[in-house]
Length: 236
Image (tube, rainbow, N blue to C red; front, side):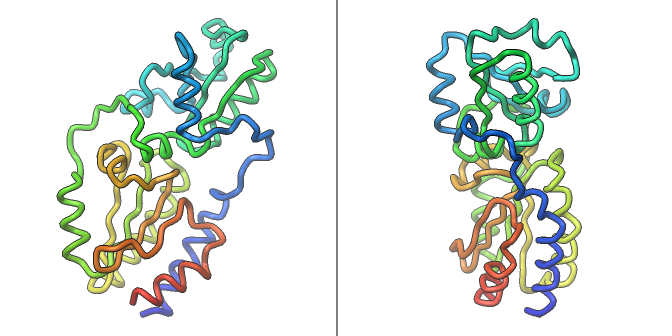
């Protein structure tokens, strides 16, 4: 069992290795959720850009944000280059690309939410959401308490790296259903639960529970084969 789990985890690491590679752009203005929120609060009318798709924005977004597309040249008319601009997406991909575009347009103070909306929700920050159902904290706690080993995958259906994780989770469910309970939590359905966990820093985020206690957790899973092998071997 342990050998087959190691094989699956190895495939999972390989499939998501790109997730851990950060852009080579200047990171001095990549800020945490706390700093992002603090700087926004200091603005009388903060310029917050949601760099995701219109569909994603409609389902959830940071309060006060506007959904802009850098491919639309008119976006520049909606922003003041003399004021700070705050940009976020799911992770750092689209937000960093937008920030680079703003820099070429003369915007000197642009802040990127490092870790994207995942870290924002994970830190319990205010969020507009249309979610009306999904796994709640009581049901989640019951699942964790009633299963010896629970692997929790937190992400978004729009997250490319998260999608690469799904086939591997399905393999885990089928092959190890008796030993391992897999729980998938998505932003679009259960933002309150993600916030209540108080540990998610970006998507995808994995948490391994044994006998109700967290034995391993990490945002992304690239380059963590040895750590995961050890965690699963000890848990099993």
